[in-house]
Length: 204
Image (cartoon, rainbow, N blue to C red):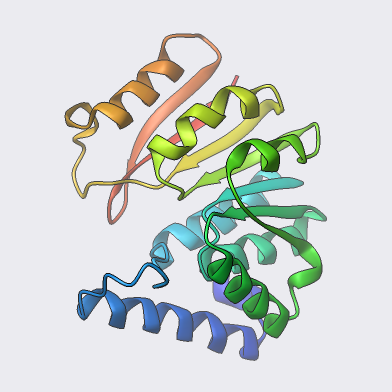
């Protein structure tokens, strides 16, 4: 069984169409603020598999965009009995994601929000066990302190990468965030190289 098998044929077609549109926009060099900006299938599959392996129940996503990764998280919570909470700052993207989730028949598993992070985090359940950040780290880092108090032992954090090579120390925002985690014994961190280099961490 593969990750794709978690989706119905109609859902597979929708996921494939979103990926195809994202690739076309990237190849065209689109600078449209409403473009998809989806994660790679590698990342989406990794997130889905990890959430199922962890039996995550409360999955939090920063950066819904058009819902490509959100669809994969929703497929995971169908197996774990959980729920996805997803935030984007652009209302048009939230609307597009909701439409895609509704088309896929997965909208009942996801709560989509638009806005900044403080109000979103305040509305989350008290116990969070899975976090995916595709929001831009400078925007996410100030919210982390507020979110961290809700993260249970064993909570999984995945921060989408910025570089194809492991050069985290060359980007002050990313280096500072990783140092913040490494300065305590509360987090186990690792740089995972897929198409880019991503920060993954587990709360101890």
